[in-house]
Length: 274
Image 1 (cartoon, rainbow, N blue to C red):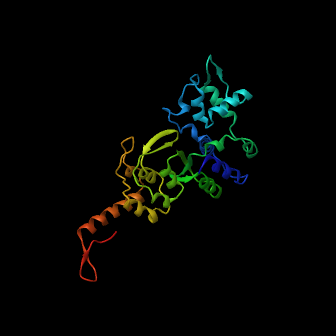
Image 2: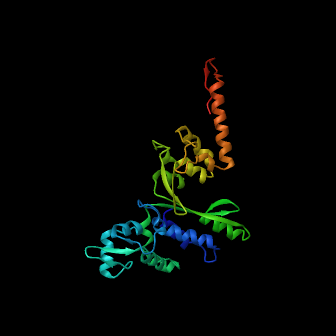
Image 3: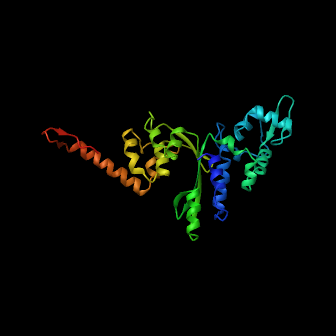
């Protein structure tokens, strides 16, 4: 989902929907997701509050153009700024305070804000864990509505602007059929921490319900669960038992098919197909 889609679905929820602290934290992170989609080192949220940044850095942080920020200064809008001899600067703490002042408290207030709409170039997925099992934000709310005793054991906020990963997370598997390098390194963020892995890492972390329908074709394209991410962890290490069993059986079948040719009806031999 994009941040705007998250906001739209939130506005559609019944007024009595159960919301926990984990839901609130993941929602706020999703609506301010682009704070961590950055070419700068480290997430903005880790910078000291007294650190001064220029207009270009603020532009990248909040997703507004430098020209719009200039107009905001003229109109007396936006974060507080420091006027220098030849340029202006912003304190990180002042920017955080400005963002906090625009945190949505109601759907009526949200209608008046344009903050989220500028961030639709990235995909966000708030994930809530019930008894160690992952559910999307809205699946979790529905589950909690039907079973108030379900145990929430954690949450994650997944963010990316990579096309391959976004196609997978949106279940657009047909788009993946056209990918040339299926093992191309992807950049994504989990709870604000930058990760660099491949599609296989994302699949292992967030397996799809209909994995058996499309995974064979991606494996035939060379999807490799042995590739390591930036932490030197292979994708297979993140896989659950179902995925590990599936990959193990497939690997065994391929090995058998290479060693046990089978005869066709015309008496010729051919390799057994998986």
